[in-house]
Image (tube, rainbow, N blue to C red):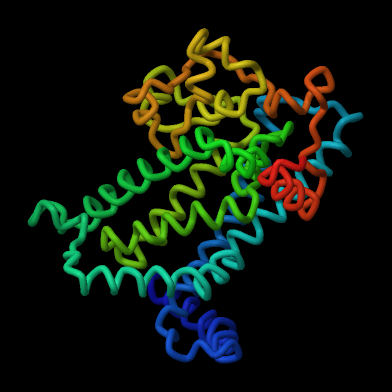
Length: 325
């Protein structure tokens, strides 16, 4: 099976990635093209999991049922989310980052090294134990999950960043495709930090790919329109669709935070592991599967428009950022 996988990766690289890199004049970065082929292959598999596994499951165990009269409107609302997911999972967005930001980060890190910043690997902290492949992977998974929690918390705490991130929360019909429903500038900031931290902690490219793929698939699951919980204790070990749906709830936060609502604008920020929320006081394990979206979308709260299509959503995000929408 590994031979088959290697042959597939080599074929994708030789017949698709390599000609494209040569056309773009990226001859000096050919070695990174193999990693690009890996991103593309894993992206195709992720799309297959979402379309062939999670989408049917949503029909069988929906958290929110759709009546026939609503189906056309729901499909129209979800269609941009599918576009976002395809663009991200097939590596198109990452390819742009590879050509623009990654060389910049590598140069910056090289400069820091010349100034005396030591070169180290996070998984080398405990020699003999962290040398084991699965232990090393788990360390990086936990580390990047915490980074994901921090960035997600900042997306809600920093007003300017929230103006971009609000697009993600504006989906009133959350599905397995909603994970990548983000403003492109929001993704640039988030992914640039992820890549730079990957360089800082010394994660190997293949391990970085594996960590990101695991996190992405779990986020597809946690956003799915599924009436699923992992149980009283399971929901405290792994983020479930029930746990994350509470993060997207349209209901006022006062129901959970009371007087602290203004100081804690959100709950359940976890990507993979809920224990960050448990430790930092933002976990909400109340029962139920609330409606999703933003309060200012409701007619009685102003009926704010977040856009119905890909380009409209991108344009309105920039306008919100500049205080013009």
